[in-house]
Length: 417
Image 1 (cartoon, rainbow, N blue to C red):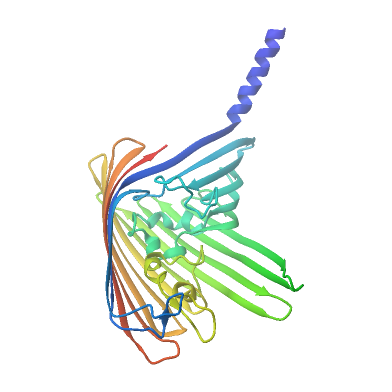
Image 2: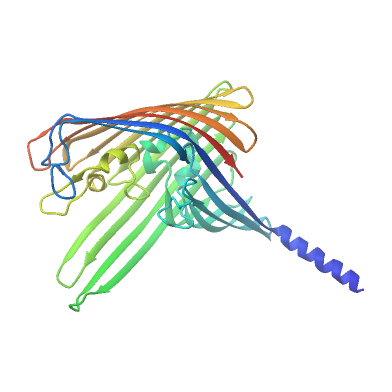
């Protein structure tokens, strides 16, 4: 009798374990890279740009930077995570996923110190009704449009299309439908509100308010060799500081972004196309502008009597318009290889800068060779060019003043576990 009870208890225990599954997964990448950036300045625009000390930051001339060496995450982002599910019955399961990015050369986080900066979600899923998740996660566009992005490093579509095609946000509630005869749709709601009150020695109070909310919707159609997708996202971002005698608004953005994509498999080659726009700001992290980060991070602008800020931050406001387009071709090479060629272009302008025009174009050629189901080696080469043309806010100096050229070659070994 006791033996029968013991066997029954063990059977129940194993059944419970079978219903709750947790999996450790990840990707790690090491390799070598050669990068060269050449910036040519055509005009002294010292009235527009200044460094942190207020001194002139730009002068006519050429600056060339090279970097060569062994690097981690030089082909794809290294990350590790845990994901799991529990069967709740009636075709429904509880799911969770947490994922952290790391630099394999140092072991440090690549998400600004956040433990699970890539993913942190909890939700429910069912084959018949879809998936509902809440937490830090990718946008609807990433689920329904980003399939067209077959680029690797500089050639990735977010270099010019940026947040319109894929971005992470939190806290987000997202619903993705099941497959409906080839169609899928998704909706998401972003909501966040923070308030910090600080009492100063003189008895005054300083209040900082951060608000982020928004919504997104997307649609995807996948039937045989053809796949199509579209998404639209709206974000409201507000940050302000106030006290009893003064109020200073840091920013107040109403950002709109949309993207469309398509892919068609001709068997011999597969064609990928994508296009996206952003208005009145940049979706996602708030200051990521793709390939322009390298250039714009170095320069500062001062408007009227306001504080000195990075020019990139100044652009991320009402009046910003970005456009990006992407073309990619993939073709199999034998059973274990694949070659990829991509081209993309982008344009940026801002209504506060009358003649501002930033035009970028990037070409990339890559070859991936599988060594096993989980391990592959990749060779990636890219060339890009950005032309910057602008005008001083309250002055009469204008004209083309900068050109940036990028050259990049990298080889890397990638293992998925």
